[in-house]
Image (tube, rainbow, N blue to C red; front, top):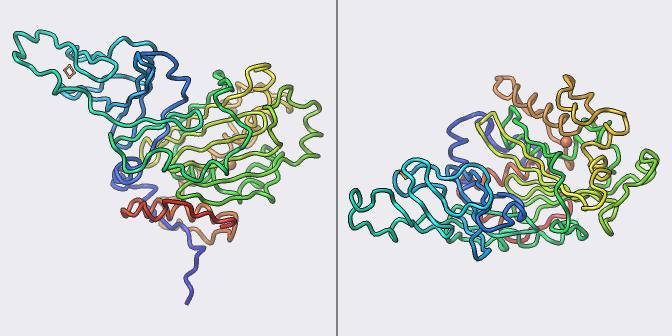
Length: 396
Ligand code: FES
Ligand SMILES: [Fe+2]
């Protein structure tokens, strides 16, 4: 009998609940891929740094005096203390908080307190910071925990560019910093990622929020492990609702949205008036952190922000945007992120029940979720190469 290709989940339930699976993912998924770490402008000046958790490794990216980016493991070579926290600006050196060993911005150990008496004949060259890798894609900084990864960043994203928005130049846009989303969501990180890709829910869960997009004409496919998606704007409805047009739509942007998910956890939303990164950070088997950063054209920033997809509905409903998160009923927030997070948390709540199962999944509009789970499964079983190279599927 032909195998039912609509069976879901493809992954076992433990993938969403168990500590052991979560630990293994750190090594088999995050440890093998390039991970989003921030925007290029987070590292504008020498001494600026960002840190990012990559599986079990915390990686720091530091801009040197030569304006080059370098990545290191965020671990002191003395007794292993984590050196830097979160993000920082214009450090002249990297100083360990424990015993004040000091490293320069190129990772060399330059100073050790009481060196002469306590560490006679210390060869400081042997205690440089461990190197990792860093590279840039579309204004985004990515890191790999290995100094010499098997795949370069451009190989990792090979074939992706033609499926991204042709008009966005992220480096020419500015970040709407007052509108960063940084929230904890009580679900496994994959539930958030799968929901990001799920086409079936768009017309249902978001009937009041993402009505301006033509979900029936969405196009999607995979390029390697990366999910590619675009859909047009519903012209008439949207124009009617927007009594005036965005003042300064992103130059030449067509009224369509490109919403890919770069494997494993970095979504993009390239709309006609904004450009966002949707970063899902695993915290525990049932807890994740969602960080969404959006950019718009520099002129008319305030008017642009009102029209970010997350806020446009509240804006036209006369709601105060900043109060959205405090609204007790996520379905009345006019906020599609609140709707998504609510649905994801509700899914996580049910998943440990003995009665939990997926009845059946949609033939076409949930196929991308099944495919994503298969990719994670192959990574966990040690076969990431199954998803390398170009394997474009017009419709999956
Ligand atoms: S652990 Fe860093 S200086 Fe001791
Ligand atoms: Fe959604």
